Image (cartoon, rainbow, N blue to C red; front, side, top):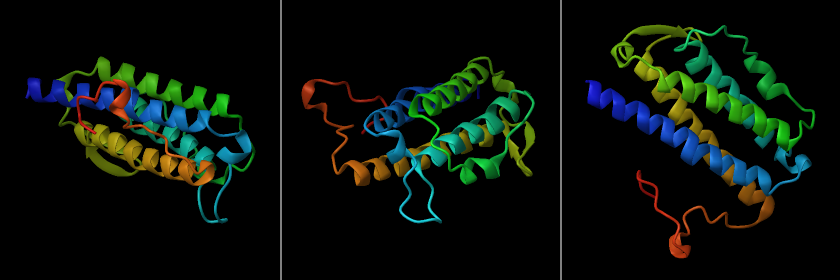
Length: 172
């Protein structure tokens, strides 16, 4: 279990830090602040809302739920936010959340992976909490990429390896 647990947490950390976060950063770099807060209709989320949501979710599930920090999340505000929080501020918050998640996962005692936690009124194991954050990041990163492509009308070229860029170890 130790080798499997280590591989699991190492991969989770690599995906969050080395795949999803850089893609979100590249998307936000292509957009103006007003574009980050654009929504196709009143019921849809903007990229800004999704970034706030990812930060809140990762902090609640890993930093608090697994790491034991206090939970001060206001989930409904992540979606209700309509002010134009600047791109730099959004990325600073998300980057800090990923850094804090990474610190918890780097120090994680692998012997607790199957221990239960109550997070967002859900009884899950530590392993399930980590898996939830990784899959949640993946889903919303895809939404951010799609919205960025819709707004810019351009290919983001994340998987253009013709320039000699290395292929991620988890594939393309």
